[in-house]
Length: 341
Image (tube, rainbow, N blue to C red; front, side):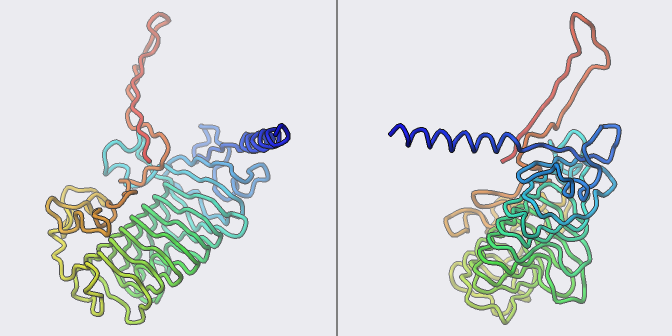
């Protein structure tokens, strides 16, 4: 018994010791803030940046560049649409990133809170791509061949017109694609998956090409249902219907739904933010229409979309500090902090 207890204590101490070596690194394009790095490529290539380290990247108008990542890293930015939604960041400036590729060695990494005007690719397993604004005019915005990918809370828009690729596509096994906005303007698919994926609680605009997939609680603003789609479990979705010939009518799917009765900002955005417009309007047919009575769409389910992609770490959204102080009264400062899940 003593030997067993000693072994357990030794394992716990070993885990705590390994965790204690995980370091935090700061990236900032403003040299005056004394950052550890000013580009993402320099940070991931540095020999001192090890597996399970965390990179915090400050907002800046200049891009932090592209990178190929081959180590397990947790990479946090400040979010996007920061000046459109309330209580986001005290400095409403996004962090811009170029092409980011997660290759072998980066298994278990997380990438969250960025604006990427190119593409994010996850070819390693168990990578989490969460709360990013990915846009551009290339043949692919986001996806990869890794297994067990989690792609959620992203705002993805692609305007490439002639290539039969996709805005979001996965070719590995067991991907979970949930609570995203996915838009494809032009040729190709808004979303593509072929190997036992779960695609749920998204808002989709554009063609859909899937097989061997559970597809539920989604709202399809417009698009087409590919004739090659096969072996899918399609239920409790809502779609506009004009171009979705062949879309299943059974299993509580709702077709030919007027989207102005679904969203607060459709067809015109009005005074709503770019991502806030996709919240459900009062009385929406998507309310309680999911497989277990939850709402359909990106704000539905047990892990709803978060406005502006604010990462799940504390964020200062209000700061009021006096310009002068004294030795007796000090310097009065008022700070408001919010932490998202």
